[in-house]
Each structure stands twice: as structure tokens, then as C-alpha cells.
Amino acid sequence: MKQGKIIIVSAPSGSGKSTIVGRLIEGGDLDMQFSISATNRPPRGAELDGKDYYFLSTEQFEEAIAADRFVEYEEVYPGRFYGTLRSEVERITAEGHNVILDIDVKGGVNVKRMYGDRALSLFIQPPGVDELRRRLEGRATDSAEAIEQRLAKAEYELGFAPLFDCVIINDILEPAVVRAHDAILSFISK
Image 1 (cartoon, rainbow, N blue to C red):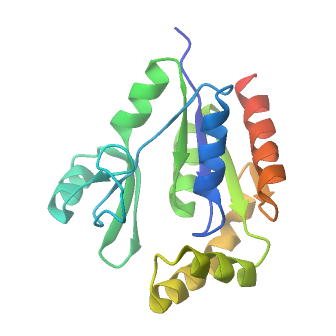
Image 2: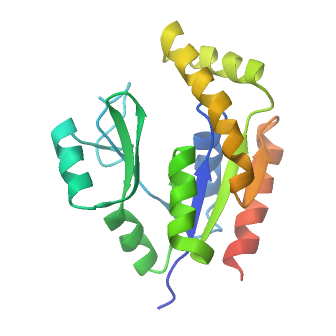
Image 3: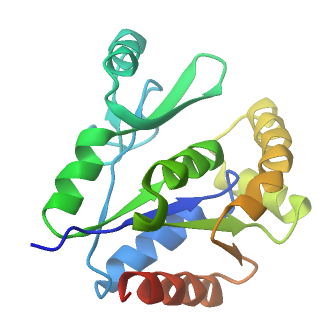
């Protein structure tokens, strides 16, 4: 059986990355399965363990780091960890499916370095920081302080865009989805 490929999608928070990933998976023609990330943060809203994230305690997360069970992990904010379990990537690609990783910018760079030509890295870029602020405020899921933290981090993360295989500016959602779809289709068809 042919082994699946790895699709990495990274972006500053609020750039539309998760929405684009959702649309690509819903399309159904790319044979992609979503890699569920692990985090030590509590669930938000109706998020479910094993569906939206693997919710781990800080102790469980640190044990997984020590056991080298992540292809990437990051302390995204002080004391707040996110990571991609190696077992998720290996399970999906061994079944012959492509795996799509919706991950932090630094994690995206690291996973691309780890998997090389087996991976395609896409950077979803907001049209600007002002638009990013509007989107984050529109979500109504974060405090004003958290939004300011996310914006400061976004400005830093934008500097990583040149390290990705493809940069997609998400100014209008549908054309951004089409550009991401076409880049992935070209990659998995090779």
C-alpha cells in the first residue's frame, strides 16, 4: 500500500487556517484525514476530547514530550502546550491516506524539516494585522488581553512565511480555499 503524504497548514491565530482546513476536508477529493492535536489547555465551548483535541493534563503532556511521542510541540504561551502526536501521523499515512496538520508556525517549520519531500507546508496569511484584530474580536472567544497577545505573536509569526512551500493570503475565503486545494492536489499527484 502506498504511504500517504503530510500536508502542513500553519498561520497566525485568526488567519482562517482552521476554516480553510475544514473546507478542504469537507471537499472529500484529496483523501485527507485531520490530525488531531494534543493540548494541555481546557476545552473551549463544545470542544470534545479525541475529536477537536486530545486534552492532556500538563503532567501527561510533559510525559509525552519526555517519551518523544510528538512530531512537534510548542509552548505557544507560557504554560500552554500544543503538539502533534507521532502516532496520529503514522497511523493515518500508514493507512495510505494523506494527513493534514493544522499547527503552529514553528511546529510547521519543524515538521517540514523532519519529513522533507513527504510534506507540503502551506502558510495562511491574513491580509493585514488590522483585519486580524477584527477577526479575533469577532470570534468573541478571547479577552482583550488575549487578543493583544495573539496579535503580538502574529506579527512575529508572519516572519516565518518565507520558510513555507506556499503562502496563501486569505483576504477572501473561497479563493484562498481554491488556492490551498490546488497546491495540495498538485503535491499529492506527484
